[in-house]
Image (cartoon, rainbow, N blue to C red):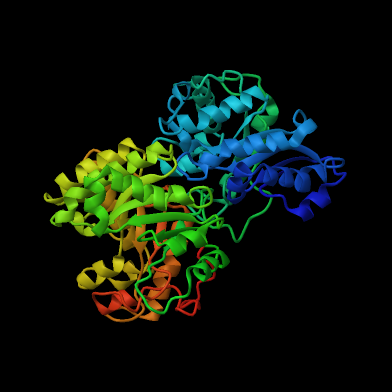
Length: 575
């Protein structure tokens, strides 16, 4: 059995069962265990030693699918080491590992050429060395389903479900073996020739998406079990047992989307005179299960309240600070020291956003890239440049063409501004942030854009294959990025929302529909037509109505909550 956190009722029920257990240290507990040996000792005492006489522990899994660009990644190895130390004389009986996802691979085809991405290598190599030195396996979640739905042109259903007759031209009968061997090849390139891989998750859904049927799921599980039990191994590891954990025992009706990290955060704007104190706001985030937050300036009260919260933070550098940070390295160093390093032990920083919606015609635009470079350099002095990514947030208005989405391209004025910024992002493995508002596109062109298309409530798809305007706008940005040479750039939706009052189409009903449907869409894991199956990291705008926000009247009515902390809409759960 594999469990993802030390549920005490489960541990009690396992006493005397002779079921071998792989037990997880949840992602949100990793930082405290890494930074405090006593936390590791306490975790081991409460969840392992207290049960060790009559529960058979096989693995302790420190984190699940933590990406190299996740701020938590910096704590994984230290947490593993601290748990290992706390095990004492149980170190040889219970192995410590972590679980990765295959997206850490930069290349997977052919499998013999598999290798980790350049950004992932510094993260995974010391972990692999730790595992090899302690005789522990690396755990990996291997899902042919997700590979299949993201590339149906090149991957047949039969190949993904073990039903293909014969072999491919590279000697594989099924996708599962190819994916596993690509991981083995990648590990070999890090110097760990004898490391074993345990497949810690694999499965196929029976509903809810492309190819997700009862028949396909039955075929996959049946054939996977038969394949594993055959003892044949893989082409690169013939005859080697493949220890595999099927995902999952039950359908989980509260699971928030695909097997990926949570994708929904909320922007915390404070242009108002009636909002609750920062500490109460952080509690509101936690109460509602909101795991990510975006703020627009380094508000010290908010940063203090975030200590130990495990909320991942996107923090902004205001436009008005750009010039000084760009022109003076010491200003960048001071900013990073005061707002990042001083909090980095117990605040999880995800991105630093250098400027919000700066137009190429704005005089400030000349300072954006130098400011990003100086902030990056300041982070590097603290060895944080791989954990905290530097970016900027753009508006969709930088597109010169957006229809059809596949023909999206930046305007001639925007290209000289954005191209070097995008090159900087690609070099450093950082995403581009974009504020995507179907509301403004809708009210700007109601003749051609139906309300249903903007609200995700349209039945069927358009003649260009889109069911909603959000996907079309996002794909237009991806097409534009491709045209300036950034084929692998990720786009994070740093703002999206719908106002409940103040203008055309701004009603409580429309806003409720938009937020509900956007959350469901993002959590579905379906991606967009141009990026199927790819998570869409999205930040809802905004936590509260802001009664002092300048501009159109609608600007004051984007909140999910009222200032007295009541939900404006009947949204069961943000995540």
